[in-house]
Image (cartoon, rainbow, N blue to C red; front, side, top):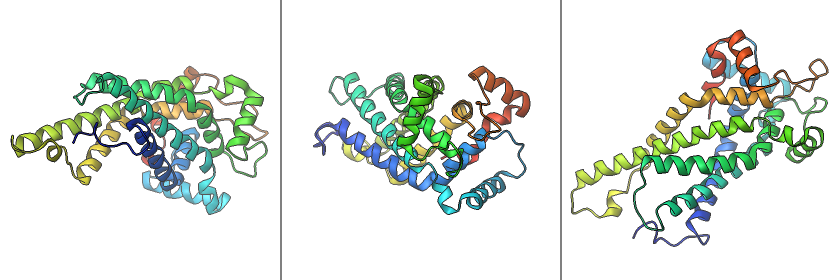
Length: 289
């Protein structure tokens, strides 16, 4: 039985994929929240590095706990959950629908270019829809709950953002988000290519007598290795955009810094390179989840 013939739990393969994406987004976000929080704080920090890679992580997490207790590690969890769950849900929904449209409803292989187009198109739609949530997340991640003007939660953040900054504020970093679509596109294209090559190798090894279901039955270890390898490739290529985006969306709430430190993408790139060099564009990469 092909995957196209397998009964859909929620009425269609696209909705099944969306549900899986939402579930995966929730679980991974809860597990990786402290590291994600630290990553954003490191990305917006212009202070020179004072510890080694592992030392920086332990020191950073300890500093968060000292300032806000263990609850401080989960500051901004709600927008992070909403953002990741909705992003992966929308992404898989559109990705599955676009791929189904491309293959005309028939089970057939898509080439790397088609996978890239489906992934990029899904990412663009998702990035536009979810961008305001990521602005709120960045600002909650870079402020303490007891600070003046700090967002109290995702709804308060969205309302305040819309009221004080309007569409311009809600779309901060959207251009970079669209550029960052290449991260997901590269990751999924690489993953699909690795999976296709692995299946082809199994087909040759098992011979003509093997069923298609048996040929495509890969182990959990193989899926983990392919997924991890694809993500490493994508991160290495596209990580700098995350740093630039975080710095664009960041807004200090202290009285001493009443205006955003960066005014535009070129401003971020110029000042970051001038004061921190190329390494400044890879701040926090060790904590990248």
